[in-house]
Length: 251
Image (cartoon, rainbow, N blue to C red; front, side, top):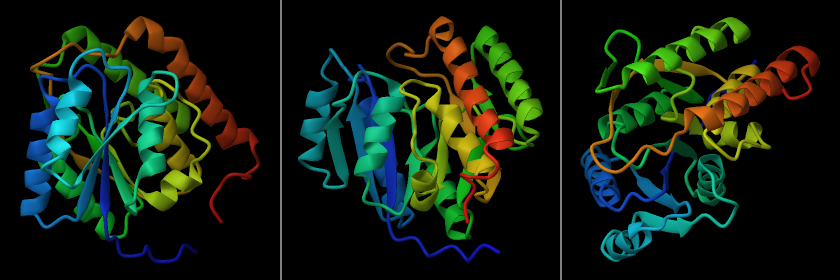
């Protein structure tokens, strides 16, 4: 029998950023305003990942007037997953939301994640593809691949979650610690973390969220590069689910 989840005191929002000088300031400012207005105690950790533009400079200037902002450089080999893990390692909060730097994720949904975590849920997963959710300007080919990949994961793991591949999710720190080691250095971390949380027995719920295609900069996700990496991590966690004999399941 699981014990009741402890009350939360601080939310850490972890944002990996590569060459996002045109939007990172507005992303951080809008997020901070929304969290402050809704009385959510928070810190915003932006991990700059091998940027070649002014992203780091913009963040340094913003941090001088925004104490909740903690910019840092990714000191691991470049990669979305490596940047996120560095942010999770540095978090001071007892819960975390992973969010994209391009403001494609709605900061109002961050507040809803926090509220759901405070109801006692250990993970909160957003879905763009359930009643109440939605996407704006999603490229058709990427949308097709997304739905196929998520259908595959639903069948492989026998779960009802239909948007596993979306990075924008929330976790209590106990879940993040219980899912280590996190081994995905790239975008495949977006499936490693939620699948491990599910397989290892943490409680989770799903809420509808909205997503808007970036209005500035260039998408960093590369389909050709990620196919085999996604497959590897999915099979890795699937093997844990069916062949580890429960060695990693929470006690």
